[in-house]
Amino acid sequence: MRQRTKLSQLFTVSALASGLLLAGCGDDGKDGKDAVAGNVGPTVVATTTSGFTITNDAIFVAPDAVTGDDITEALALALFDLPENALVVLPKGRFTVTEGIIVNSAQGLTIAGHGINETILDFGGSNGDDAFRFTGGNGITIRDLGVYEAPKNGIKTLGVDGIHITYTATVWEGPLEADNGAYGLYPLNSKNVLMENNYAYGSADAGIYVGQSENIVVRNNTAKNNVAGIEIENSSMADVYNNIAVGNSGGILSFDLPGLVKAYGSNVRIFSNQIYANNAENVGAGTVGEVPPGTGVIVLAASDVEIYNNQITDNETTAIAITSYFLIDDDVAGYPAEFGATMADGWSPTVKNVYMHNNTIARNGGNPRGALLQPIIDGYTSAFNNSGMEQTFPAILYDGIGELLSNFGAQGIGGFNAIVGPDAAADGVNYDPYGAGDLICANSNINGNSAPEYDQVNTGLVYPVDPADATFDGNGDPAPQLLIEPMIGTNYLSCTQPRLAPAKVTFRNNVYGCTGDDLAEAACAL
Image (spheres, rainbow, N blue to C red):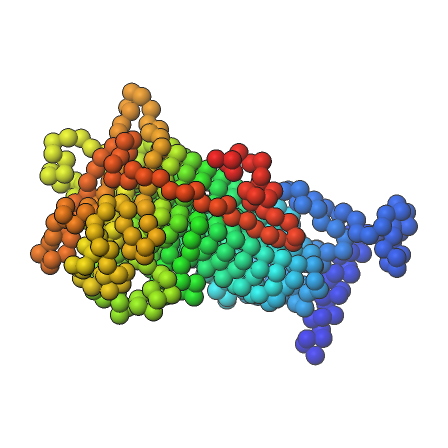
């Protein structure tokens, strides 16, 4: 009986909304033709602040609601048993939602508010973890609305093929704190992910996150005051460009973490972004909680990453950090037992095939900190390292430990070669744990510091990659040394890589990204 009542209410809500909007238009409701104007089919009744048109055949949620109303039941009702290609329109104002909204297997659904600041849904009193969760389905669009104060995650998708999130905000108001929600915009295990023109603020994990997914374009977004601004994790074929990452602990992240269904990612391009002043203290948990505050870009245990043409400035620890998983878990001998199954699926603790070029780097490294880098910072601040000379903390920082361990070859060290197999000889940056010629390269990057304070921009190598240069601590483990040299003319990372292929999103029969609708975009020509 309860079910029948809700369905009846749904038809009443939709019919009432359409009737109110069409009053006096003379539509007889039979042939789709407006008897007065002579129009055929749906008519435009509103336009969002982004220019999206709302038509009279939409499902209108609580059209008479006023700011402060609880629209939970009307919203859940409107999203129940949806027809294909439905347009669901939320009212204008700020409204309370007290339950998480779950949508299963939607086909061609569009959920739209009236604008990123005009339609705000406040989940501060909600009982669910996720504000919105979309499971399965394809061709789903979320746009022109804000999701505030979600208990855990803002908008999460699981197993969706084709998800477009645009002109949408996820916000936790107030300071960045550990009890804020974890993820803002959160596609997971999905394909054809397009995220553009969004705003993410205050996440205690990642503001804009794509995990274990493929065919991804993240462009023209702003991520501010999160632990991680934008994060691509265990994902393949991803382009991250024309975004702003500011005020986070870490600006843009590319991670491959162990133990996930999609064992590893590849082909991640991070380019033409503004990444500045990411100096918030890290209040996160788990691996993201290890990100040193003050980091512009961090690559962790990932492969095939290209970082280029970004403006990376005013980050207090470093502009770019390239790190293996050994900085997270230094029990090298324990890796076969702990991560053996994951590594059998292709995950590696090392970082491989990273190419950094044509980035403008300025005013980074003024206050390096973070437990993950503490041994490195200790080495940097030691009298031995400075040798009486004033040095700037490295703007490009590569740990080198995986490369060093691999290059020990047949000697092995700490069980590492049980993981990657021996590499017969030390060969500098050209280390080859999987026989693929894996390089970490930096060239043609630009010192953006202005005269007369034209400070040196440095490259730092934490562990020497040649075993002949290694030193050892009291436990017989390699010791960090932090070898520093100027970024321009660096020898440590002097190499080039083949350029990575652009990502492509196919959504509702259209192609998006640098080989699609952005073909003429300046960033895509670089």
